[in-house]
Image 1 (tube, rainbow, N blue to C red):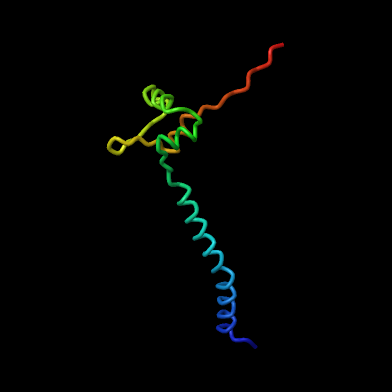
Image 2: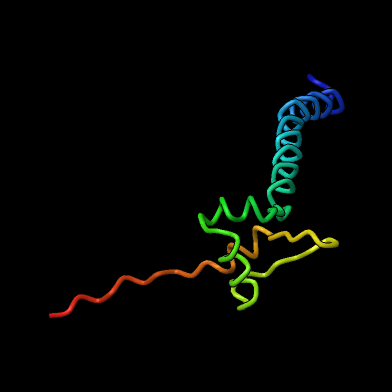
Length: 97
């Protein structure tokens, strides 16, 4: 007859071998999620390229409040979340009968 203590130890060892890789994968996924949750900052040049527009358009959108801008000293930046917030959904037009 197998001792309960030995059986318990064997089960703990098997469980550890099964659970350890899962904990490692969870830690990896948490790290990836943290990287993605950081709001990317775009320079004016990057924002122009990202939105396929020129600098005067970005300036006009800033002045109109369409696109939020941030600055450090005299340098202007746009957060990715600000760009996403400025985008509006275009609804399909209803067909006339």
